[in-house]
Image (cartoon, rainbow, N blue to C red; front, top):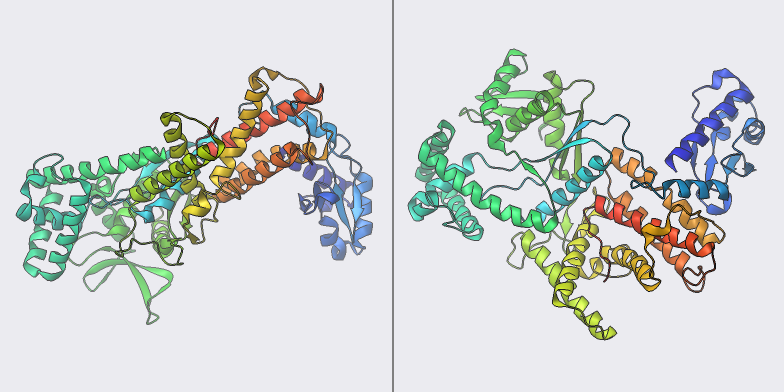
Length: 587
């Protein structure tokens, strides 16, 4: 319907010029979807905005526009409502033609981007020697969905995992392991990830309390940066240990990433400082090299600097981000770089983006985007934690969702007196559990906090993954019951007669509009809302009391309605796949 709206917009623009002259060329006709279906499908509100300029009543302006407006191929005769709204109702024949056109299109009428771009999505980004926890959930899921949508649109997407695999923490951990568990620094798989995390915590406590140990740890960092063979070998073992554990979770979530950690940019950091120095941007402040920022002040109201080299000569997070940004523009040739992190890092991104712009590293055709998201809260409204006050391990959270889905399915099978294989039960539980977690996150406006509730996300009612999965499976059940192969329906004509058919058809044709908006605004919840409303429209269409007969209908209505069922299922499957959610043929 995006194309339809553009066509209608162009027609209203032409009518406006025809009615009032070329000086109104370029005036926005303010064409929007109608807020109430009884007024039609679209509404042009331009007459109200031109009243003062033209010195006429809005209704008179609307009348003049309608006299010159030819939308007869798409709409019923336009109607003027209220003070001057121009209401447009799509013709049934036009809707039928649009549905007939997308039947054989695997993209369901969604056009690919006219000018594909090289885009980078930076997401997930856990730290080595630490387990992925609930805090990594949103970045991983939101980033993956954004990458999927951009890939579907035809963009060249580089999915980057900017893991924390460098810095002081490694000197601290290696120094501690040399004392208490030296085998971990020479032998692969000597520790599992849980032990590694435990040792890391103990090393941190020691580091904070023991000045002599602090110095030993710093020396290990120096050795690491200098490429000392034993320290470098130990570091590689620790990274590989963490990487294997991360991969278990990524496979469970069906996430594809290219790892390029902080260490990748280590050799580029001196060049960043040197360039900023030559550019006259660096200022020495208390021994540290900084760039002072516009619009940022400390508590005392003094200008706030971004430190790019510490007083001891070391580098920090911002230096690495500047180096990575420069590399992504110059080497990766990215035209849009998207960072998916929590909202708390908003100032950090605004600051280092500003430094990069001052340095002249951001060409006019490159867009930098921080995609912020809120917190995952427990049902008490506070940050979700274990009973011991620790962050919930992401692996535990996902396993619990699958376990609960397994229990719910077994209960349902008993109630229905249905026998299924263990393989079927395990697969359905896995898909439902993982999908429930993903959808519960993606269906929220990412900028908001949300409460994590297994009961709500696994509910078969409401805006949840199980509801979507059931709507898809229900359609597959129609094909099994009627022994119908949807692929063999061919290019038969769609006929829209019942009001629920029309409502479903109009919604099916909005997919391109929704995907286009998510591509631009990077808000996956809009796709979730669309799929939920589509599922409701389908259920109203198929409802035994208020909807229509499908398998029992006479031809040609039977085939037409089966095509509507198939288009709905394909739209649900495509939309859910863009959210990283797998469908089920049976539940």
